Image (cartoon, rainbow, N blue to C red; front, side):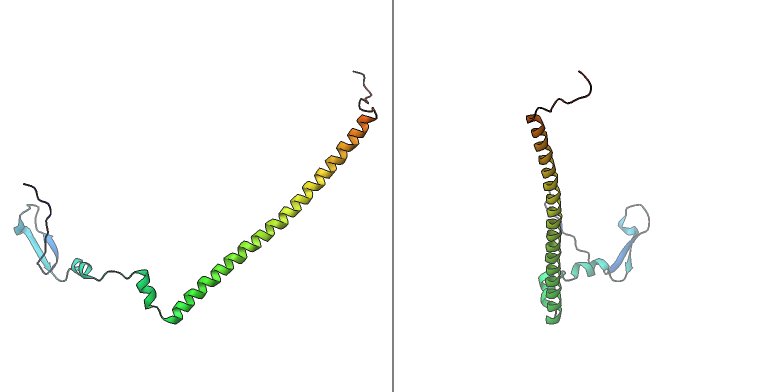
Length: 128
């Protein structure tokens, strides 16, 4: 024989149980009178959902929440735009420095090629 499920209902009106000794006998269990907090927890209504809490707000509170969300979104968009503009300016400066270095290297290579074409590429004071 197997038991599929068991349902236990506590019909006592006690707040808690006190065990008198460690014998395990049901005679040693005393019931402390009072209201059980477990009963209150079990019989409490379920918590409200976010939608139900939103519906309970006053129109002024809803406007305040909406405007706060809107202002926050606008601030984030402006912050992202500021960051992009700053990065573009830094990129332009970096590009200008790279173009200047490229132009300098191009002039140096052109001067070297000119020297090579005139035959002055093996000028040295030491013999090999």
